[in-house]
Length: 487
Image: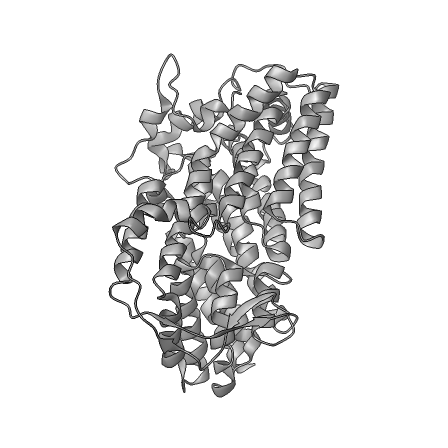
């Protein structure tokens, strides 16, 4: 399969699948740019304010100091600021400090790695081989894979790393008789429910607990309940949907795009009769798997982030190209083509971060936080923890980063739990479950819009699929944290 057909706009000789995928709903780029405009407008309405900040050595960042909020001179964001926001999403145009440029470059290196891997033919052949072996039992791929992604989410906050798996997994899922939404759901919801039920995730639980001045192990039992219960709910929901789609493809939320998705993701699969892996392809797949194992080890135990992960994928692409004897020209062209495949995702990353930049420059984030602080004062236990959850839900739309939201909100909101006779660990649980829930649909979260872009699923179709699950999860989370308030 030629991966260039996955995400480019180049028409095939017979038809243009992209035309079949068109909907009246705006693209991710338009949605994000409109959100930049909306947030800029809010900076003219919401008063500017700031908390004093001090360095917290355990968190490793400056955190807000409770009780120090004060209004400051407004800095409303105008036309020039809106136009600069997409660039500022990558790096500060004045100080040149990095924002999301590291994530965007990682995405391009990741695309190049996948391009080289696909040039070996190992993934295509492996897909056919896997489908042959799983014939009749394909449905069990869903809970197994979702569990693996959830483990990544709960242990080290797996998010941007999942972008590598969409182009690999979706062809397998479509070949099994399901649809592209099922493939997206396995990855996005699987990793997302892991983050929602984070147990030892250093980017959510550990940072938030440190900011709340409690051990991160406090509340781990309740979070484990959220993780296991949420995973069972989500896996059951996706399996039920997948069975329904396989039995009747017209019941898919992307039924009108079914033929286009099959042409894009399955080019050449229906005609491929020989699906025996060669020795070289087996070695390539081993290196492919080892690359992700090393990435997980590096992120979880060595403090790796985007630059080192990008270097890992770059090096692995070279090794695979040499072993597969692609030659210098095919190796470089495959890498460049693969990077081009994910260029749109890299641009989405900058746009999403641009929203946060506008809010920070307009100095309205602390004002919103101060309003939450005022609202929560003096409430009884049940009302306190549920309102805390919904405040964190609202803030998550503007601050999708789990670590960013923890540093922003926990130093201010966690101490309020003492007055409501609620454990601070429950505030941390409410924060991370709210952030995890919102980030299943958050249009300001690059992982959501990036994954949907690779899977060729429009945002409105994703909402049509997931809204009942969001309702179920909201009820489940509210019940768990409400019980936790009285334990």
